[in-house]
Image (tube, rainbow, N blue to C red; front, side):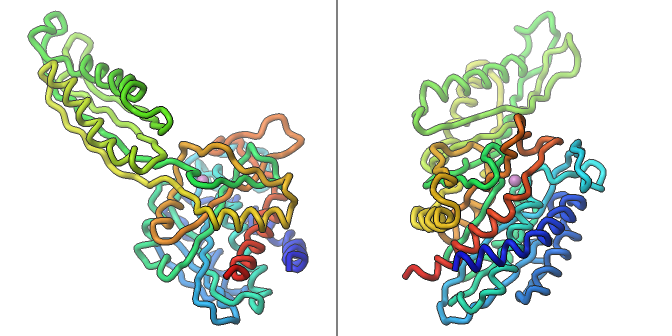
Amino acid sequence: MLTLIKDLTTKLAPRLIEIRRHIHSHPELSGEEYQTAAFVAGVLSSSGLHVQEGVGKTGVIGELQGTGNDERILAIRTDMDALPIQERTRLDFISRTQGVMHACGHDIHTTVGLGTAMVLAQMADELPGKVRFLFQAAEEIAQGASWMVKDGAMENVSAILGLHVFPSIPAGSIGLRYGALTAAADDLEIMILGESGHGARPYEAIDAIWIASQVITTLQQAISRTQNPLRPIVLSIGQINGGRAPNVIADQVRLRGTVRSLHPETRAQLPNWIENIVANVCNSYGAKYQVDYHLGVPSVQNDYSLTQLLQGAAEEAWGSDRIQVLPEPSLGAEDFSVYLEHAPGSMFRLGVGFKDRVTNYPLHHPQFEVDESAIVTGVVTLANTVYKYWQQS
Ligand code: NI
């Protein structure tokens, strides 16, 4: 079966590169993937899939019915949105939209999803169950997966697979991870409410800027002194606003940040832990405060047996020296985790780095580029994993 999958994919490769370049030159921002969605729907329906548009706002679902009576549904998720970045590559198919770029490789994900659908559609006789392809909107703002789930995308799904490109892994190779792949990412907003006064007489005021700086320092130190270092937490305050004039004590400061963690138990205690620290510092100096801790996406926790299935399928296709089992998770975030609240799944990293280049620019860089040969690697890996999924009891 692997030979058939590889043959079908090789035949499709020129068309897939065309598709990828088309999507790359027409990027759309999160939640605005209208043309991309219409294009995806067109390719899916001309390949014989049953297509539903407008799922999760601008998302698309394509379903491929196999010929057997296995009731399991295997889902494959890809994302379609681009970023507000001005592209600075020299590609012929550079973005035609000012200030918008596929700098996170979602053009590759969409193409790999379409390629897998096109290949599997030609071997539907070999599939005893149903494959549901999810093309979601708005991954970059961590919303699209929730929108898809709300519209029923995960109904009756028994397992889900996903991928993300990775420029530091060479094209032709794949990275897998058992357990945690990405972190939970939550939003934090802290208001420090002091009292204004003359810059010359701070003892008559309550200096919100000085107290805010104590809050930031205490939070960073307290992570190292009160939290288990084997259960990582990263807390970054990325925005701070307050004050009106150099000689006036500020009465208000707003801090905004992101909080990353890997373990659900660590995450669960973070809102109270942060609020206590803020309260203690503020109470010491007479300031009032408000803490808003907003839960974002959870950590992607790859299922053991599905990761094993992926590894087996990938090793069969490419040999074990091209499959890396990643020793560490990332503290980045991925809304793939939202699907995992409804079914077990596994997400892999598709290498897209050029072997002959010294610099492979990172994701979200205006000069980010991918080695397109990775498209075939992605399609064969996914199609072979889907085929093998039905083989296991
Ligand atoms: Ni991405």
